Image (cartoon, rainbow, N blue to C red; front, side, top):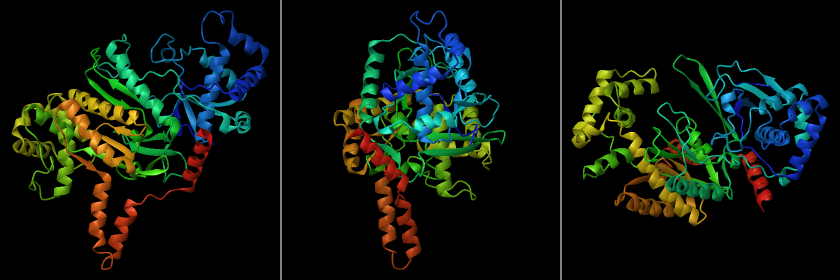
Length: 490
């Protein structure tokens, strides 16, 4: 099966020092026609650049890793010169544009299948990327490998501190004492997480496909690979700020891309074979803004206390207010906020004047926040919450306890949830000089179950629905993946 829309991005940071991989690369290279070998090597091969065989190793390891995740996956391969700038700090291995010639040679010798980029439903940021996939010829060679003996470095020399400009493009920057300190923390976290297994226990395949419809009504498919090879984390700073005080949140881990609505796969995450709990700060950004005014928000920040519109229930109203307020915090003007809300909620029935009433009601509840809305404060608040996350992660790394950051929430083993709450308190005191309130998914579900238990005999359907909602259906395939991982690390 060769479905161009069932694809992941090519990983230019794939690497392995396994003797089996090195032998495979040698065999594939020697199988190329002699004229192709000579053309790839060229006359300048020994002038300090990456060797052809090392380039080939990157391609082979990337294709092996993708095949190991799912043999049907394709890879979106970039071919533009700008994608292969050797001196770019975001091209950590220094892969040259010659990689396109290496890939073409593998296509010509039928190691790779190829389709020119033409799909509009590609599942990656650049829809026009070409697609490659191992042929049966290469897959048969993969099958002969002893997977237990092969260690793949999926993020070899990959940058962990990214700076982006106003257009969200990665830009270079000089290292400083601050960036080196940030890198040390992120690197320590990534090293610690390599010792732990994270997966979605309910999935038969370690892949999730999320389908979305864009503004033009075109269906898009996003392929999310899952598992230990997709946990690499980095921090993104914005606005070209070389002080590194804008944004700074943690990204990269596959869990960040899992949906919370629809199939709630985040609750099905298992760490080291154990179920997890997610704890998040309650109304973090409004709370941070209030603290700057010497105020502390208590209770539900987004509950207005009364219903504004007859056709919008209180629960629906709360959801709208929450999303609208968070968008407004990140917007520069009121019209920007309403436009962003409408784009995110295509087909919703609320008009601008109704959204304005909801936002006005929120301001009436917290008048001291009026000047903070639609004033582009979000970028600075993200930096604050990223600092809280850094403080939490430092403690977990010190104790070798795995943790999955999701901006202002954190997933840990259920056995570590009480420890997490204490660390969250400590981190807030360290960064803010103040503790904040937070909510636990486990505690919330336990409350629902306690309520349902009262009706276990009189309304068994209600009781069972709550009970089943809390349970994760652990697949046999997940248990097999976890067992194989344990065998490799022991």
